[in-house]
Image (spheres, rainbow, N blue to C red):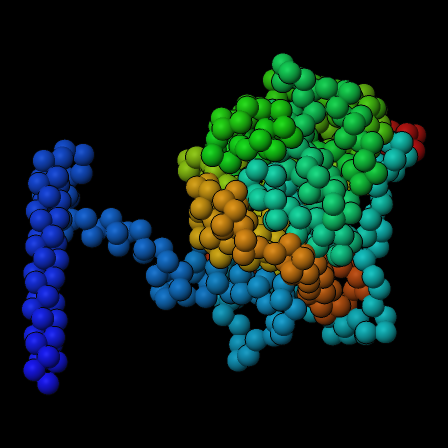
Length: 510
């Protein structure tokens, strides 16, 4: 008994001494922080409120996580609100996507679309699959035919991880859709899933460049030799940063990425802010014709809409040169597009969003009798059925999404894409963080999301009384005005008049 009492006394004594020792270290640590904060000159808050002022920066850092999970309402959060993300997550997991008790989407926000349901909706027995569309028909050696509606937008290997590319490739194959490589070149992981590929040529010409950084016909042929590569897309600009090239931090440039891109290991990969060999509409059309001739594939370009006179000039030049010189497709990106790293001034203030630019560009092409010749691919937060259906009604032939498929992979909108610290392994090259992303499992989610999105667009189309999604047009949509009432979309953007001379030119070319 005495032994136990002595042992207990020793334990208490050592516990008290340890507590005082820890407290002493704590006081010493605080004293050191106090001196550091009081003597530093970079941060006013820390200098005026030593130690305590540090909590401001801590709370500022964790605030975004509290807002995301506790304080933001379903329709408030940016860039993507919880309601849209939740729909994508459930669609990707192939679980119930129905909701109860009413929509949380306000139905009186100016500029938002609503669809006009038909008193006699399309019956299930009359539903038709999406029709095939051929890109480059009659103008290229190997035109591309597909009935896909939603496809995977450009995300470079480097900007996203190996398992992410593998999952997207396999999921795209399962869903029967295409995958855009992004400007980072063609990796083995794009090909291993067996899906159709759109090869993007960025301003740095990664993957198809000479040592001097110029476009290489030899490497274009090498890329085109892969049967999976169906089209080539020249990237003029992208949504988050029009007028700025791609930015891949050196921490992400490993040996493999270096070899694929043709750049040095560990160095920041900064693409030029424009193509050095494209300074006019004629230069762009020359580049399109060159790539098309070398590869035998349909060729188009991707851009964020700014000056509309560019598209007027483009159409006039096409008619002057012959409609065979036209791009086979144009990808319209939205000013609210996303990327791993972009300057905030460009992300916040430059370019038109897709809601404005898409109908305007479609009308310009229509007025010049070129809408059938040039297919339109729309991009920009079109990751739920209502937004995708609106784009089809506005005149798009296809829709592409990057962030929608990132959510399908498991992205939680942690906003860490530019830091190589993505917690879900999508935009990081740290093996420990990539371990959670299992390509075989995530590929299923990619396919589920694509299929569920098409199904949802079909629900809207059938409610509007048409048999398949691409039959939607502007008469099926109304746009909410400032007073909460709506105006027919077709009145805001009436069908433009087509000049007879353009109709004649196109007819003769066919």
